[in-house]
Image (cartoon, rainbow, N blue to C red):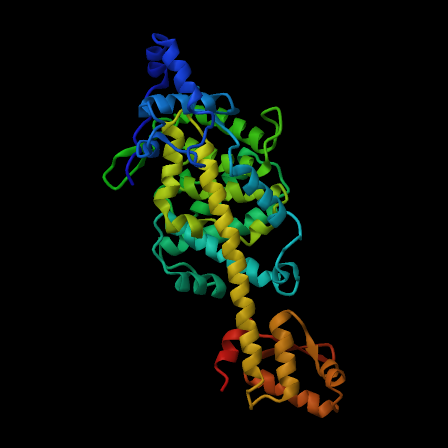
Length: 444
């Protein structure tokens, strides 16, 4: 990723036009919108578009910037030089916010699989694993999804730093689900950082605390070119207090959509870079906390990191566009909203594939000769109700058979590894195995 070209200094451009006011009027009338062909362009991109007839690129840029300036909304976050960050709600931001409101806050248009208490846990755990893996891979973890999934599901100890990072992220996402009703505080952030960095830092004492005075942590590329030099450690306490006030809606005055507030919180933590390591993972974790805190419960099932990881340069560029263009957060907000939109679509596609797979398995079950029709009906029900408990008596009543026939049906399914059994009191209870789909694939 290359550093985007910094825009021309609008102050210098303005001084030039003050010498020719008539020219300035002509320039301003050519750009009534902050958008160019429906896009919110940084100077780095604008250079490749043709300006309105009679204008230079720099004149066009000044006109666009002046138009944007009249619409900006400032937030309490300031850069290390004391200059505020700001944003504006241009198209398509309102439409995307509306779609998120409709699709992730209530139960309207929600897939039945994640509103059904019997099946939602499968998708919840799958999402946590997906986010834990891809968020870690963004920070350098190299373990494959298959190995990481096996580690988490079996509970075995991590073998290396990459696996430890993934396990830490998984625990962090679980922790966020329990913290979603709490207000954000410095202590909560430290708690998340301790979980995220457990057994992964060269200096374990750096876990759960700010970087110390003199610890200069910069963001660089593979050639050590500095992309971001965060504020000094001495500023962090005040900055984090301001961030918590913002997250808890104590500042600023006026309404900020909670999704935008969550996105800005992600940027805010990353900009401050308060820790020696783990800043990106903590920033994404705070985004999830904020979304869940504001009632967008579907984000327990959504992984933004899997989208970011596909084009990590776009992620980095959205930060750089903001920093190089007068702290304009609109670039980062637009990018993040696109990521959310794609992550929601990804979830629905995943659920659709799982539903189609389930239907295919049920169809194949009808042709499995080693199972009778009663067993096939029970397994079909178990696929959709993985926590259901079956008894000999319930199976007997469901299929109007004698006790011995029902007992043999269930014991046979247990012997084939499809059910587990447990005796409570005088009654035997049978439950589906956790990997029922995989076990069914081995039946002939």
